[in-house]
Length: 277
Image 1 (cartoon, rainbow, N blue to C red):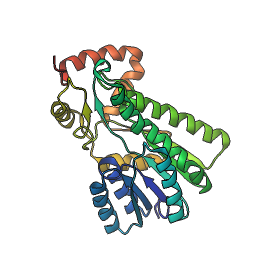
Image 2: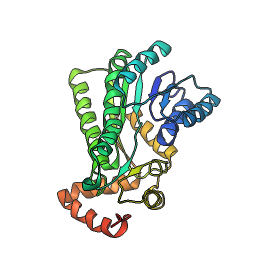
Image 3: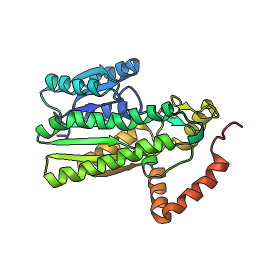
Image 4: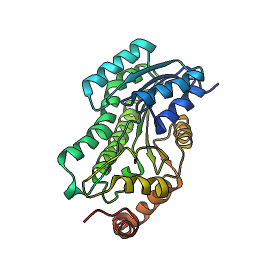
C-alpha cells in the first residue's frame, strides 16, 4: 500500500506542469485530491485525467494571491473531505526584467503569487494539517531560490523568501514536535509552459526569452519532477533538488560563495537573451 493511500492532498497550480504531474502521481498512489488553478481549462483536463485513474477529486478556481479566498477555500476543502493531510503550494508565475526596467507592479505581482501565495496556502491549511495527525507541507521554491540570476530579481526575491519561510516553519514544527513535516522544493529547468506564459520588461522580447528557456534550460519532465518530489515527501526530506542543473549550480554556489555572481554574470552576458537597446 502506498504511503499516500487515503491521504487528502491539496495541489495549487494543478492545471499544468508540475502541478498536473503531482496530481497524476498522487492519484496513482491512492490519494484524494483538492485541485485548484486560475486556468480552468487546464484544470478541467487535469481533473479528467485523475478521475480516469479512479481518484476522488474536488476542483476549484483559485487565485492564491487572494488571502480571504484561500482561507475560505481551506474551510471548504476540509468540509468536503473531513481532513487535509498534505498541501503542495505549487502555483507560480514568472517574469523576466532588469530592476531598472521593472515597474513596482511587475515586482509586486510576482511576489503576491509566488511568495504570498505560498504563505496564504500554508497559513490557511496549517491548522487542519496539524489536526490530521500526519501532515506535510510542500512548498515549491526554485533553483532561483538557491542562487540569483540577472533579470530575475523579482522571481529570485519571491523564491528566496519561500525558502526562508519554509525552512523556518520546518524548524518550528520540529521544536514544537507537531505532527507536520515541511519540505521545500528547488526545481531546475522543467519542461513546462511557465516561460511561455511569463511576462517580461519592455526591453526584452518575450518570445526570445521563452525560446531560450525551452531549448537551453528545460531539461526535466514534469512527471520526473513530481516523482522526485513525492520521493522526498516519503522520506521526510527538508529540501529536495530537482534536475542535474539544480544540483550542479547549488554546488557551485556552495563552493564559490558570492564569487558565483561574477561567474554567472560573465556567462549570462554571452548566453542569455539580451535586452533591447
